[in-house]
Length: 68
Image (tube, rainbow, N blue to C red; front, side, top):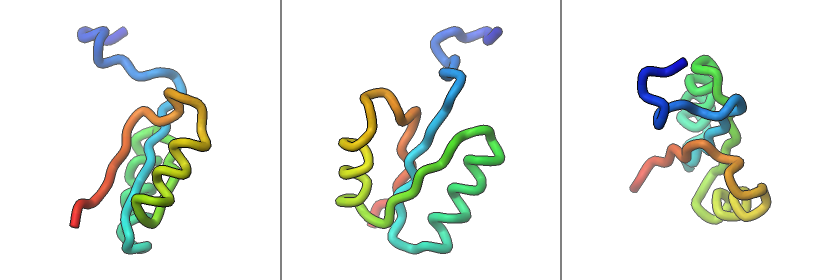
């Protein structure tokens, strides 16, 4: 039980990792997996939007993206 109920995550936590550099994308995805997240990756914003639109609303707990 969390002391801050508003910060509780759903049982299945999924993060979308978006980065155009494959090595960084995989490194960040592995880091999230070690924290208990399922990591789904995209190589750019277009791929990310396609993944978001192709999954049910609420699938992704968070999106991590580099901004360039």
